[in-house]
Image (cartoon, rainbow, N blue to C red):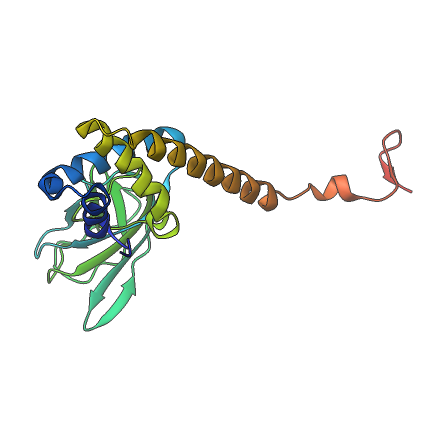
Amino acid sequence: MAIANYTDLKASVVDWMARSDLTGNAADFITLAEARLNRLLEVVATTANLTGVSSSNVVSIASLQVVDPVSLYLTAFEKEYFVPQSALGTFYEQNTPNLPNNWAIEGSNIRFDCPLDIPYPIRFTYQGRFALSDAVPTNEFLTNNPDLYLAAAMVWGCGYVKDQAGNTWKAMLDEFTAEVRSNNAQKKRSQLRTDPMLRRRGYNYTTDIST
């Protein structure tokens, strides 16, 4: 079974446990698994599909675990429009409903520079904590590491039913987590750039001139 989203992950947990009576518990296992992932791993790139409210210039993101917003797109007339982010208070707010030109984060809301003239579909991308839900069905980490996500949830599932297989899943979880952390560290090292001053050939530390 492919694990592409939150629904797939819940179904896979139930399938691997061979316990159809735990269908309603799978969401809890995933939530508990994500609590551990949030402690061990960095923020994850996530896309949330939201819907604006006509005649309102705010959209709630209280249910999202946003750390850093990245981008926002509105869909209108079958086209996506990029809306740039600005700092709160740096743009003029209009009273006439329209297609917005700016947005900012205000507490647990996205605030536009004008009320929306229609309930625009919104694609909001951000760096955030692990927190899958029906509203946020997938993230970059689940796409790239479905095995780790499943193992993390299965540890809690096995613990719930007191299944000794939980030890096997825990071993896999620890192994997969170590691999991901190692890969992330390697990516960071590869992105480092040496200061150009340190690459100057023949640098004379006494006279501070190139020779």
